[in-house]
Length: 343
Image (cartoon, rainbow, N blue to C red; front, side):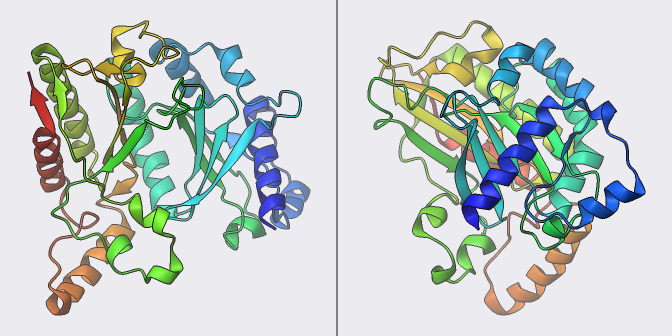
């Protein structure tokens, strides 16, 4: 079933990216036929013109090259499944050229928050802050019709397409062996998805992705350190105003002598390509991920009551998913400052 599901989902995503969403027309017969779909479901681009302008004007992505990343080349599949990662049930794909990732948003409160609350402000913010570390989202796909596959949670109906910050790893001179990745969140929160789920239900690899700790310092020269502080403060202020919590800093470092990693063509792309450490040993990449938990959404409000009841007995302390956006931002900034060393 897994292989069939992945093949069908790959085709759904490819068709959506190569189809003009304006050509789609809802009909009664079409809705009925779509409803009985299990694996292959029709997807459309949401706000396609908005994302096209973001790609071209802000991210500097050529539209034809972008489409080419999702086309099949010879025997190489256009999308490579990366498995169902984490506790949200998200499915991940990577394009075969490693430029982009496809992540499903199966939980209603996540995709409704992004679509209804965050999408327009995010678009405006990225236009005025091209140097932002917020992960660059290049497309958002959704199913225009209800299907049995999405109801049964077999096939997700909402997906974001975003940059892959590990681009170039598989082509590196060290075969990627020396590349290190860290998914960083404030460590003084209690993470129910990590600490309450019984171990047999999740893999050790999945557990290791949660609330990593960076065992070193990000060593930067004064100008780079000041720039990083300024960018992170602006990004987290935006997320606080959007009432988002539980986001993380995804940090990558690899040897500075990697020959196949190009220099940044634009100043605003430097954290996507790699900022060289002050001692010349490492290159750092960083993006802010997973800002889809809106504190004001019904699910988060319900979780707050559950957590407060649980803490009467468990006394585990505050959880990242139920704190205020202001408090989470403060602790996130403290975490970034704790791993930053300006030389």
